[in-house]
Length: 392
Length: 58
Image (cartoon, rainbow over all chains, first blue to last red; front, side, top):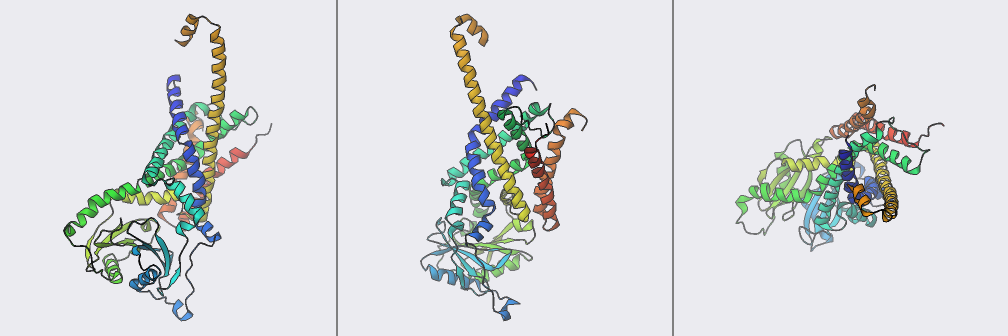
């Protein structure tokens, strides 16, 4: 590599990482508890468990009518309206219901209802409790909404630039060294330079994937808006002049209609009229598969909330599929306990890469400053002509 | 690992491929696929830990 291009790549690596490092440290630190959010929720006593059924029912658990499930939840908050109800594949005994003052209420009330008896189980802590909620908000948007989210997405792009330029710089630094060399004995700076190179190259692909999928996730709201403005708008074209809904069709029958239309699929969640996943006149019933990969992909069935018939159903567009597939790759929640553990270790390794990078820059900054001081002191004693000659 | 290119990049390429296999296998299946993922993703982590923590004699 020529000196010129080495200087150019160093410049890119320095500035792309300097700008994003503080935010990446924040994301790595807040991301660590998020990897274990289920376990932490369990420790804090915030997880929801369905009560045991009477023995005569347990062998063949009943399925409660969805309208009764909704009625139980609404009895707690008679003035609020339904936003969503969802079900985890591995917990079919619980419906997670959310109620709000309006369809986009950010301070919604989560309620867990028994899917077999339609009895309220509990009101789970909002976003897993104060601690987890703070971690999540800091991680997703730093409490700054969509602008915060997009800002973090841009920082993620800089991280990708920093990683790629880092790989380019790996070659000149490591050419004369064996893989994994860490020179402990020379100087602290050299030791951390070697550690930075080693952990940087070891975490390379993981950091690229988690970084890139994180960036895709920051676009979630924007992609959803695009989808609403294009495909959903097309699906509800016939409802352009429809009057606001007065009476809503039973949800249970509507969902049964959707299930019958998509054999082999399960209900993932139901979006109620007015929410971003539905329309003012429709229930959005989101079906998904039950296998490792197919459970990540949703197929929306739009049901007319006035008469309970299917208005339209279609595959998600490629960009929403990309978003849904990118989510597990960011969260590390799809491979069991070992994957969670490795995710946490790789996260810590990334913190060390970021920290050592910062340290190396501070050290270099100090050395450069000392050099500049020396130069200044020296130049003060030299005639002007000599100085300009040096610079040329 | 004889050529200078492979001496420099052999290990990073190998670890990169293992990471990719680890990330993808768990996505497309459960059970044995999760186990494959744990092993292949575990290798880069183990290599990183080994070289960070070891001290060369002398």
